Image (cartoon, rainbow, N blue to C red; front, side):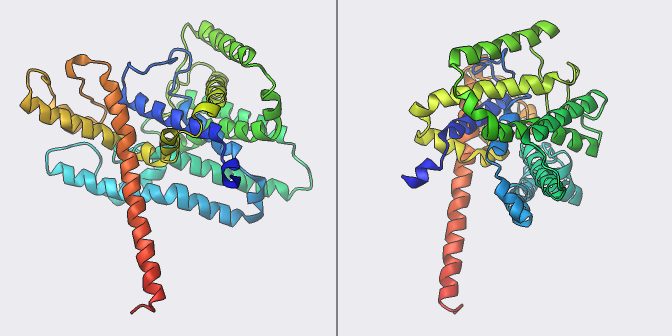
Length: 384
């Protein structure tokens, strides 16, 4: 029971909902577009995960900055490079079958591109966020440690407002052209700046606002959010969408991206708070929540699995699975096949986009466990 109390199941739900929406967004289907017009997922979802990272940040880590940086490198950056190498090999092997998806197996794509834009082999393009989060968390704790050396107490409100200001700066720079596919390290900077307000909001929420938030009735809470969202859409004639992966479409003012995104996080977090007593300890929810890293990196492989099945079925049942575009299948990672244009096919893509990465992670965990067990047994036997 003691271990259960340490788990905040609100965040398990937030992780699960967030990652499923990420997969849905990349599947590009209309069947699961719940509340999309009010809370566009493009500029909000990664902010949800960043908010959670900020919420669980502990000032105790500042006592051992080196250990914190090592931990973040181990859990965020090292898997990126291992997956990147694996997908680099995978891309080269698929080229033997006529595929053109993904870049060349070069030192640049293996070592630099994961930090640069993260889209080098395409299948693992979700890694761009993990790198941005890694840089953000490392820079954040280094700044905290540096400021702590100054004999002046900096109130958490100052940190929060500074985070908002940095997010505004990121939106400004994106609007000035620090965005897109060919801007180099400017893109990395803007990505980090974009996520700072979410991380700062997570810290500030836990330390100061959470006790007040719990007192606000849900009816009033949602009314405030929807009124503010409506005013934003009224201002621009539609609900603005933002794409932090390339920091594109940041032409709705420098404050709107941060405000709109944080309102989306506030909405879904309250939803998770309300659902937590019923679904928080669900095995399915926790299975998804505990595998968000793998799902982020590997969900396109799940999509490919579905498309491959459809392609094979098109040979067996051509009257049902007709017009399967083999050229697009081999050349465009974003192309998905929809039998008879059925929007409900989205469910198949999302299901595979979640389950295939979970299976991959379970296999890797089994291999890791077996390797560690065998190595431990070898050491105990004296290496004989």
